[in-house]
Image (tube, rainbow, N blue to C red; front, side):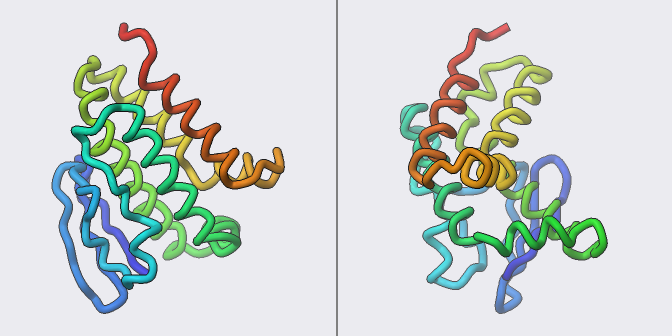
Amino acid sequence: RYSVRDLGDGGATMTGFGGELMTVERGRVPAQAPLALPAKLRPVVDLNVSPDAPCRQRIEALAAQRVRLYEAIGQSGVVSRMRAPMHPVIAAELRQARAMLRSQIRWVMEPELSALQPAHASDVLAAADVVCSFESYRLLRDDLHLPADAAGRVMVTTLTAIFRQERP
């Protein structure tokens, strides 16, 4: 278990199992960031891609990472979201985790986002955040009954459309 405290402007402080601490500045979550997780959980959060890689490769790595993460979280993610409205600590941890995951999208898709006008970049990041969210993933898996690999392909298709659109 780890917690993340949003520092604003995309930064976060992450505290892990053993109280390890890491500060990520201005949304720059490194692909191999030491997220203060046990080694066995590390593969589910590592992106394993450079922001210098081609757009398609970064999108595929992001989708694969979210599939691994959400499959590892499983029903505990559903339960936490159900309990969050009645438990402020759980709600705060979910907000913090979402902020960290959003920062990860901002970091890996920085070349595309920085090419946009700020207001449009904010909209594109918000759309990518929704596509990459646990809730969207559960909709694909539970309501549409897609297997994990198909849900990942939907994520790749949607992210590709979002980041390759016409620029206003």
